[in-house]
Length: 225
Image (tube, rainbow, N blue to C red; front, side):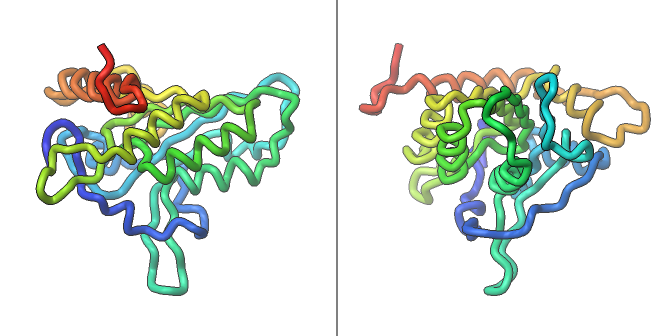
């Protein structure tokens, strides 16, 4: 893997057709957060921290699920199917049975951006649920590497992110402010302030530029200027 956010394609080997909701907790311990969200680490597991903003008079979301933490679960043999963190979130949102007459906003902070399959599934959800606003902030860009050219981003991941944005999702790379918000909201920080790592700002800028290029690339594959 390189410092720009390439990772091995472990997520594509996970069967996502079904599966129980992944582990959920109100707070992450400090080491788990730093190990998985620090951009210079390359943990395979994807963590997703979410929070929901309810419109006035809304109901249907259990108070204990207005914010939460999910992670992907690999398949365990033939009896238990795997579930990506994004799909676990969709299952949770759909279980709320939100009415379509009021707007809802879901904000997610992910250790990896969605894979192609998850991006398309999220986009399909937004098509059918236009009253839901989805904002995604990722620590790293998830790409699947080709053995002969491990710096090449496969088209499927680029198309997935473009499709997701095209259907109304806001997609961005986490900044220092976002990491600090996660630290204060989702981490058992024991009263200690967030201390950014030395490469955080430079990594975020590089990844933001890469994401911008992906999202602005025309369908014919030529780079926009």
